[in-house]
Image (cartoon, rainbow, N blue to C red; front, top):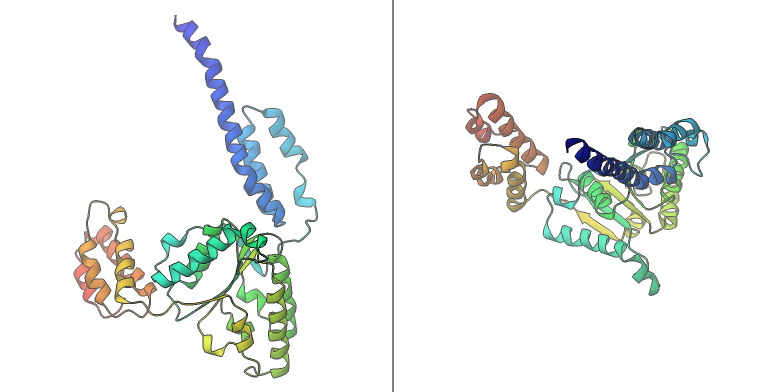
Amino acid sequence: METAEFELTSPAQARARKKAAETSVVRLLPKFLQACTWGHSPGMQEVATNMAGILDEQYPAVAKSIREQYRFQHRQAPKQLPESLISLEDPRHGLHAVILSQETIEKCHAIVQEHSRSEELKAFGLAPRHKVLLHGAPGNGKTMLAEALAWELHVPFLRVKYSGLIDSHLGETGKKLDMVMDYAKTAPCVLFLDEFDAVGLARGEGSDVGEMRRITNQLLIAMERLPSTCVFVAATNAHNMLDAAVKRRFDFAIELASPTTELKLLCAQMELAPALTPGHDLLHLCGRISERSSANLFEVVELCRRIRRDLVLNAGEGIQTIIEARSV
């Protein structure tokens, strides 16, 4: 009886293993195609290797073929990732992870909705709005918000590398800016440029007025030529220094100002949630934390993390001192 049962269940188990392998490979296909689209050779190689590993047991011939015949890394993609200028990333969080005012949440939802219904807009001769300017004091979530938009839109997050873009020779900065914008046209994405005032400075503000004017003019043209599939998000701490014509090119201008008591409370509740303090309930501290003078949400986050760290290392004996301290 035991042998008969083994013979009956063994084929079922084999089919289940094959099905699991097939499902795993199918789930990797979008990531592989995305890497191909963006000319990201390391990403293509990584996914192909993972596929071969999954198929080894059930489809050894296919796995061997992938390893032997995979040559994508030697092909010339239509556009190669300019790795010194752009970091191509998978977004790690959505809007739920960012502390925002209701007004900002509504604007973000409007952006996401327009892009999810782009075909409907197209029928009316319209395109989704896709240029977003984030401004305000540092530490209030501009970068997190840009990444969250990519997560909500289900597209790659292209983070411009400031150190690679800005060159001591302003003419080179202009050329690099063109490379960044050209690459962003490859496929739907969120292109994020922090410290935007470095290239969007008001004409006449730079030490080399003529060259700065050329870069600003170049930026204006590049922004106009970006397709609506590219959501361009620029962030700056110096909104008043931006060129007026550049500011007018943005569809949305979102200020992330110093946090209100309400936003500090939401931030504290998120950072001291029971899931992050297993076996302890620290939510009663959130009201006191929200009343503290904090320049930005980053300070609130750091304060809460000090509290959690003390909970682990000192059984919470230093929490009172941490809260009463003047600074984080």
